[in-house]
Image 1 (cartoon, helix red, strand yellow):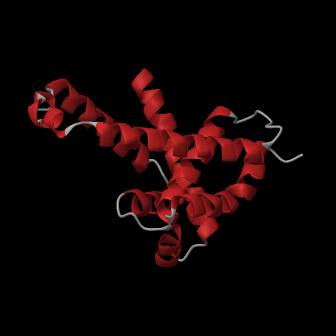
Image 2: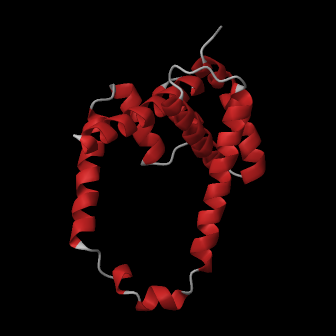
Length: 166
């Protein structure tokens, strides 16, 4: 029987289409699908999932719901709080240092990726190109681009977690 990861890959494009119809944005749908896929891979590397399609969809829908909740809370924040709250004007020094450390770790992790994987990841995350645009630019298939981006995200998360714990 194929592994959960292989089965989940079969549903990736289907999930992107479903999310696109719900969210109205292919870019947002791809981001949610990648995040859902990555979360499942991180939790279930060797574990069989009895209903992989349902599990993938539920994970994706939970991410959509979480995103809506966060944006709703942000929209509900009165502007006066932003104008009077000092922390919105001056970042604490330890916060800046921590961000710089995390950025350095991320750069180290990205440097470990293969050239093609790194290009796909950076074109997606820094330039905001769609999978199709990246595929065209690099002469790859969309499926290859999708796999590279998911692999890059998984690698970066795992390496940053390893280094942070060390």
